[in-house]
Amino acid sequence: MAETTNGWDAKGLADEDLPDVVDVRIIHIESNNVISGKSTETDVLTELKKNGVNINDYYAVMDYFGLEY
Image (cartoon, rainbow, N blue to C red; front, side, top):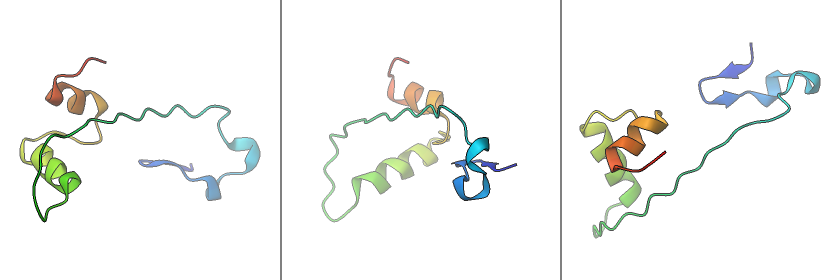
């Protein structure tokens, strides 16, 4: 099987085996944290992980930030 935990491995699939539709959801959450000398992305990921939020779980992240889905 060429479906991985990160999506489809296109190099491992013949063209006829590729899905017709790939559903992608991108959520942009604006951060108002200003941390000099630190990457905000790293800081947010660290915060989520520290609080036990599975960053691969769309609903867990949305719930953590109190956003509707």
